[in-house]
Image (cartoon, rainbow, N blue to C red; front, side):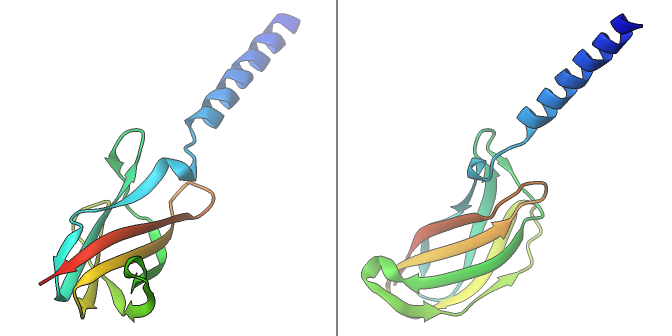
Length: 130
């Protein structure tokens, strides 16, 4: 009987260890710009959420904060409105904005990822051109 209890305990330890190591860390994820250069005016910013170790796209994230401003050019108070729009490709997220002038923009995102604890926060730099 003791032998079966020890085997069960060993199996439980293996299962617990595997489930702990299988979980990713929020630092294993990042948003990436699909293109970092857009034309001035009405624009669509497209980002992909990826799991860095594998490069796999991550669908169904809950993006709860987004901001776009001209911080990289020293004008952080120059914000533009930005709104999420539908995307048909899993792991790809689209946003509509108006890039009123040529220059660099900081696009900041905050998201929750299904099954992970913590908040993913990324700041991406894109450029508006003529």
